[in-house]
Length: 153
Length: 418
Image 1 (cartoon, chains in turn orange, purple):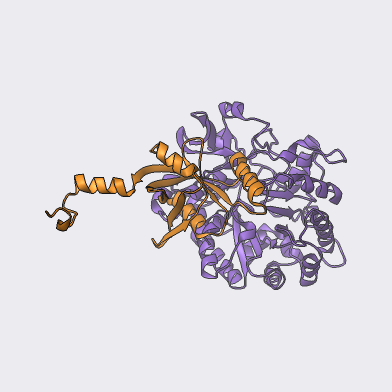
Image 2 (cartoon, rainbow over the protein chains, first blue to last red; image 1 turned 90 degrees about the horizontal axis):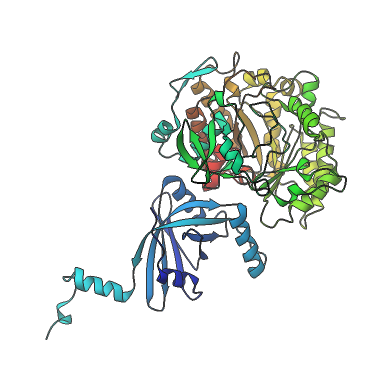
């Protein structure tokens, strides 16, 4: 079952200054992370990842994930905000209106580029990885995780 | 694995059992195979939801279908991983999967149970157009989700000598298609060029062009005239591209080196396929009497290997009509034997740069084998895995005939991971 994207996540995804990283896993369990990935929000509230290269490791790993129910991770960060989204690839658009829309759109903006797939990723968990949120969590929930000098008189 | 008994198998495992038994085999590819084995039936509710303006309806094809009819039905299906299923409309009493609506979405149903959501193939824009000679462009090039098929001639000369391949219904279907739909049996290069020009205007829609037709035996040397037809057609298609070579596949008779060199040098063709159909000489001689008598199994095979010198490793392939090697009474007696023999021969070819793909055999009413049955799901799963493993072992690509450029080979669906 998916989880809804929050207002903060939507804001980050639509901000061009946001750093966007997609991490997948290969058949041996090795992680493969790619930065600066094109991510959009789909009509159903899922993430849409535009894969430009059919032969990329990410594309193969996403294929393996959709075949064997694997998950991927997406990290978003910008101006002190940092979130991690765990997601499940649920659909690979290689044709049809959604694919054609993005294919034509990116070519109109970027010139002669190719588009292999539009991967639809359903968010299953959103984790706030920002410094403030992590600090608050450790302070209230894991009070042992500190150094004594921080609380010394 | 199921034991082949006559034209029936016992102890056949269901899709769910196969998925449980082969956890490293993708369920969606196993489903594709099973849907192809058993065919589909569209419910009235599903048909009522078909939108002719956006869904591709059945268009002319080289071969017929399991119901032997040409009905106005959706062309085929797409699974959510991008896998294409070329389906055969099948009478409900033959236990096909049903395509129905679930929550307003098309879905595959098996004996009342939901299996998977599916999409219908989207209709390409050029399907609404006609050539300047007045022929519907869908009669000139038929579309798959990402490929254009051109069947320049749908008559096979082996049939004239009563030596057609026993699984094939090409001529029966051609006659039916011509009489019922007015589909031309021979296409003019100018009509083809015009249609391709229109089709590629739809930005992002197509990645490959595939040509195939029946065998033409005429010419100074065997198949010379067939080669001439292909060169003429490919040159007409090539007019539409800025590069000399364009992503393309030819599935043809088995040509000699001189013929292959002519094809390669004079056209934009990038890959070559010639189908051995079954990978065993004895069974080939029975199933494909025309190919056997005119050229022979060994020469057909040797020509494939020699084609690698011209088209390159991974750009030459052979196709199998998988399951027909088990036909009665002269086919393999067990699926294990058939699998072993097939993979051994496929390995011989793979070592030499020729890749092997299969289609799931559908016994069709217009063919000699019309009353037989195809193989078990387990057989097809093991064969797909075996052929893919050979490509991994020999680092052999199949880009020209993969899930997207073709979509009709479960084994090359697996090779998306290469």
